[in-house]
Length: 394
Image 1 (cartoon, rainbow, N blue to C red):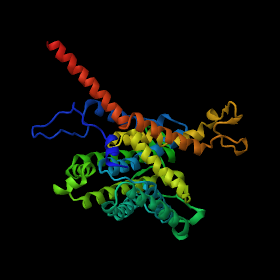
Image 2: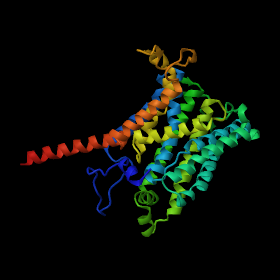
Image 3: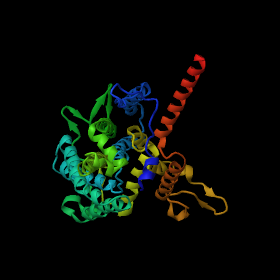
Image 4: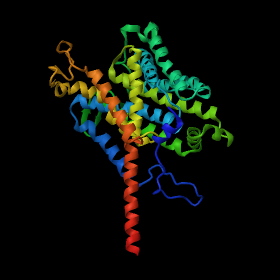
């Protein structure tokens, strides 16, 4: 991915933002009244959703979207804010999943312990990958991160004492209690909540924490240094920004978030087995699609993208009957899980087609994603207000 191509997908400057007396742009945590309202509505939606939705399918889908949002926020930090491209993100989810299976479900470690271990292990592995970003760029760095998928898949298949090998390993007994709050058996507003509803809350609490971490990081001096590296790494080095320090830090933080997300996601699955490398690669591409469609280099874009694209394969499987229509002239169903009917697409293949189609459409017509579209509409509306005010003044 070239630097110019990446720059097309990054958010453009917002002229409606004010500037402080020092001349630097004001960049508050919630920069507008609309952002504050959306944050409040999001919190309210997260609290109410498990109490209103009774269908376990939707609770599971939305909970998984939360874990995908955590991992997508990490990738957005790495790619959107630091300019380092990775196709190995799924490997860190796998690492987190096996850690919770072994230490959480196997040894009975409490939730804070196995979650912290997953994040720390992901950070260490990410920090080991980071130095390659100093020697390789663009497609060469993509190949290096892609190699992680094959390494982790090989280890998962062959380290049977830790991962269970091809037989897999259970995550069902992983403790979900933090102090007096047990996400596996909790009550809220007089209602008894099951395990999946508790995991929904856990996932979206992690989304809130991750969003705050990323948002505050990019507003800080290290965040501005990462963005300088993204825009012009040589120029950033000249003015005293350490490429090594901040690239490694970006990989470590991004990998920690992905590994923590993978641990919670694995608990929701209850049982994990090694995937094929191609399936892991598709999962990594799904994360790239999430941050591009949602809006690269934005916190809200990663969350919105995860809500839209994260559950897509599960939604296709659930509503396959709607897509099971006969194609005129071919006499074959468009999408079906029944091999005997010789469909044009299986559910998994159709999901891949949808991902590819959405990714291409986003790159062609809205490279800055949904967050960029919302920003453009806000700027256009502010410009119209200023024009009306100028007209009334004359």
